[in-house]
Length: 230
Image (cartoon, rainbow, N blue to C red; front, side, top):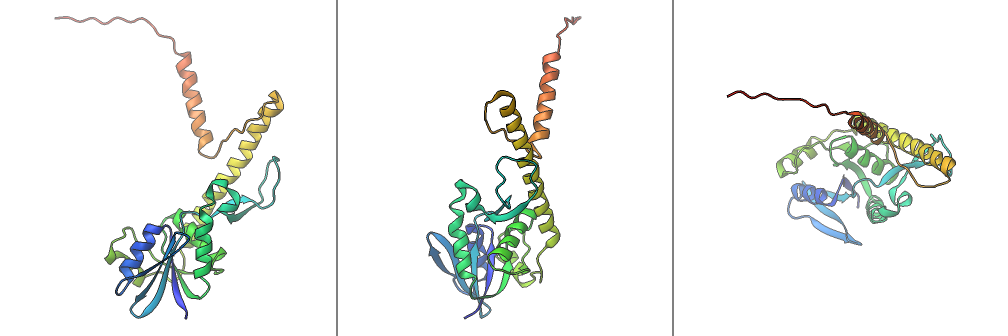
């Protein structure tokens, strides 16, 4: 039996969407403590699944050691890239399972660049689709979620997706190349190896702090007098 799959950004959001759309009560399923919901909305079968934030992240397309610059990137499952993101594999696998018999797909992640990228990556890498419907809401109230579903856009919000992808690429390219350059410069001059991280935001912020610290150190106090008259 086919059904519609609604993709949410996190478990709490999936629960709210399922409760809002269900004609009666949604049926909760749990696989390895990962929840998803089965419901009927106006006699239409729907499954509501969830991610747990980003399930995919940018990484080098091919391992390049500590060489730089590197510009060849690819989206990869985050649990394959980060040792601390092993928990994301359960959510990835559950979505992979419940997408098999889905006929239509709707993204119900946060309506911002980050949420749009999260939803789009699930649609293209797990659901193997190029597009999906898109719900737009700012609160998780029942009335707004129902309206958001009934008036869902027929296509994904690609301008926001592209904006989110651009930020990820900039963060990655600045971060990995500048961090490697700094780390290797210290190693080559002192023989001491310690990873020094820097990035698109961190670098300029550190410069502002460094310049302010120089101003403070250059400051020379001067004696001054105040006169008070009663």
